[in-house]
Amino acid sequence: MKLCFNQATTMKHSTLEQDLALCEKHGYDLIEIRLDKLEGYLTRHRVADLAAFFRNNRLKPYGFNALECVTFLSDAELGVHLDRVSAIGEIGQAIGCSCVVVVPSFDVVGATVDAIRDESVRVLHRLADVGEPYGLRMAYEFIGYPNCTVNTFGQAYDIVRAVARDSVGVVLDCFHFHAMNSCFEDLEGIDPEKLFAFHVDDSEALPPGALRDSNRVWPGEGAVDLDRIVGILKRKGYDGMASLELFNPSYWEMETETVIRTGKDKLVQVLRNGGFAV
Ligand code: ZN
Image 1 (cartoon, rainbow, N blue to C red):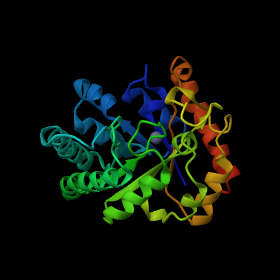
Image 2 (tube, protein in one colour; image 1 turned 90 degrees about the vertical axis):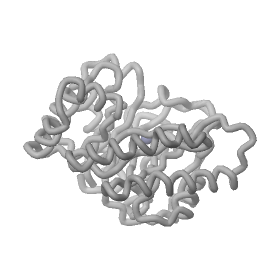
Image 3 (cartoon, helix red, strand yellow; image 1 turned 135 degrees about the vertical axis):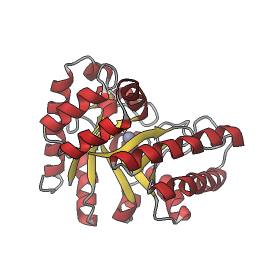
Image 4 (cartoon, rainbow, N blue to C red; image 1 turned 45 degrees about the horizontal axis):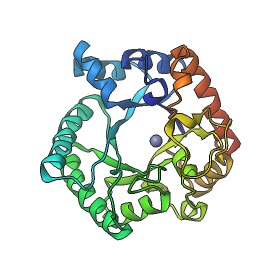
């Protein structure tokens, strides 16, 4: 299992330059780059500088986060996302990064499960049509909020299966899995090849439907049954990446290096508890 750092964890005060240096120092294998942090970086550096960093260091880029609210849009609005896929694809080719996280829309009044499935499948095909020539893969991430159109693992996995395209897979985020009571039975049915990103985090013990990203806590210190989730992935033969992704505002106020070092220790412990050799 490869250890990955998601920049949401240090979102408020850190920069891509700082996260890169500290993740390299503390032995992460991979980083998920936030698009807003990348935008900031590119006001100070060139894409070639980023490519050179990854060439000269052990740390490698895994993916970009995120294209958000991609479904139930007008053609013009979807076109903006398609243009972003081209731009991301070009940068991805230059730096060796081949995955982008894609998030469904929220607050679509009256949309049925079937309508959401059809629309998600349609949009993922459109995005994949643009991304594939760049070697870019789309990782669809369900969000465990009641008002997200795709808010359980089973619903997201059903959509990705319906797309039936090698370049389209699912994100499993432990916090989101817990937050809307996703089914462990659905997770037992996963084809590990379809799991493009595994976000590791934990949660304060609020009732289903009440949790928000700010309720995330260090892996192993909350209410999520991480042993069961990680254990299932181990049994299913998943051997991809595990990415620390916290959005806790109190962690944002801590020293960045402390967060990156502490987070890695917590991540490693959770993976070991689930049977992975890390
Ligand atoms: Zn996530």
